[in-house]
Length: 322
Image: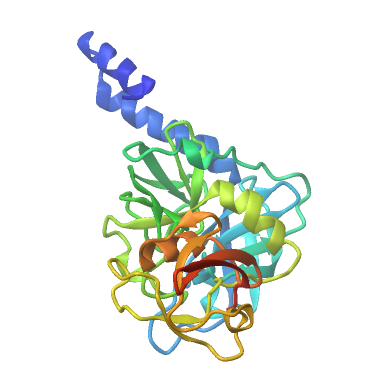
């Protein structure tokens, strides 16, 4: 039990309004991060993509760097708008440029030229995030003056092949691109639609307000994603380029059935019948484990595989592909 809840319990004995204190804490957490939450307006663009109706109202973004760098969900840019306007918390609108896209996490990076440094939120380290802790989803769509919020808990810390945190706070297109914060107002991550079945931008949107929402960890954004996107390089999920013998990823062992011709794994020497036993020093007894270990890696990055072939173990460095 957190110190906050212990204090509430002790106060409750004295007849204090616990519900009121709890609500005050949620509002205070949202208020702390609010200066770093921006409203984004899209001008022009398609109203649908041939399958789904695309949103046209204001959307949410989160400041990641004081010099005018902002992340939001790639879902919002499906309409390919003619112009992007960012309204910062102080109320001024700025023209924004789309710099790059992270296709693995469905994030985009925008750049504005603000008159003064933008407030950057305080983040929570990933190892400090705990299942069951409060989680507050914050957006700036319904009203610019006050951020909208929903409240839930962190329900899992390593989902979508290790790429995301899961929350049961109501997450919808209204707060995609906004932060998920803890009870102190520290950012756990940025809200995005994700799906285990597909890396398409629309994948996962069917779950909105269902009690299943996903966020890209803030620590990953700040230390790994943002430094690469700001160079203008879009990022893609890293793939091995092999097909496994088993169709069941949860129980099947990662035994190679075929290797994509001309792929990096073929050049590295992998053959049908090889069993992958380790990736980056971590044992991978099942295909699902392998997918989870590889999940955070991008195309173009090198990983070390250990394979078992005819009773011998061999180390193979492999460059992941798109």
